[in-house]
Length: 97
Image (tube, rainbow, N blue to C red; front, side, top):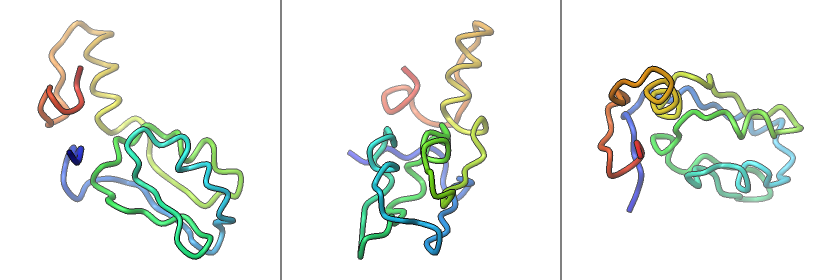
């Protein structure tokens, strides 16, 4: 099953010139958005990104950028903090539990 949140809205960007191919993004991404090709990280399916920011925070080369706090993870956290329904646009079966 492929986890998708909202189509074509993810802020995730990769600067391949800066990538050193360490693979840290593969290790920290909860939805396996990345893979390695020719010793560089590649974004597989951008729409699977939940914009948690783990890749950006853990990329020592500074090759990744994502505006954390605007995606599904934030919707889940805010709903728990405020006792409201999750409003990230995806089904509860997929990501909002």
